[in-house]
Image (tube, rainbow, N blue to C red):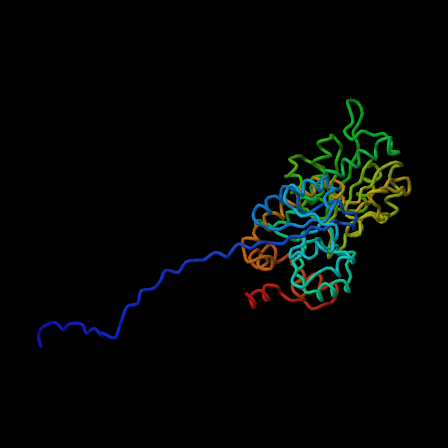
Length: 405
């Protein structure tokens, strides 16, 4: 056969058309959100503003808020009601919601109200947390997210950043108040005037708090010196404030001399392994000027002055060795309206994302910034630092989520 052979076609073979595969978005879920009134940790903030509540309600979500939850932040019950929130008088009713938003850590009184698979956003106050509390929270099978550990797309912590900015700025306002005669101070103006030198302010810590305290103090015209054991942070601070500020590592002899000349000393050191290093001894404080002011912003994590002890918003100052000590934890809560607005700006987009996925638990898996902030997940301890602190079993949340997609 000399001609070309025709290709054999098997009639049993058939071509079946395939349907186009399309990505089907998750059905929008209606969330049941609860916002309790805070009664602990000197907390005045609220997790969502009325404006944020209005956005969520307009998207079909239900928001329960305990009566008076926003009053300390100058948000009235009427504003929340007008925004579409349902006001309730009983905290138990609030904790029937699937998603709980708090600005204070979970209190002992609230633990019995928690429900299985409930998602709760709240701060974690490590110094006051104990192993038994962690075990009880694990027994409740909740999903607990530490709002201070929530990361944004840049990898930073937006709520911590905002609260640090507030604390740094407000520390200078506090210093000005307690240097004045009305608060039994020496009657010193921070910036001085022509012919009169400005106040000397020492800031220990060059992180976000230290940076904003430095910015504000320089803006008032004060003479500022900054100490930190990180050369990188000192260099970064000088770059950010765009001025050649006096900086030094924390060397005891240098620090002692500078403190003896200071009118105000602000402690803003970051914790190391959950505890702030104590760098100012009692003898250093004894060498400070009569009527000078110490503001220990690091008191939330133990404080960096040997003479520090916890004070309250109602009684914020005590005097020791002739020096006024301001040691109020959660300093941002004193400016609760601004602080609440900042927290709400971070939480609102996350909650909107919750309603656009399969609900609260699913958002944890879809946001890497929430995975690292989740410290308890349905009975498992997913925080490596807490597991190490309390000598408990740690479970990687990524493994849990990959096993249960």
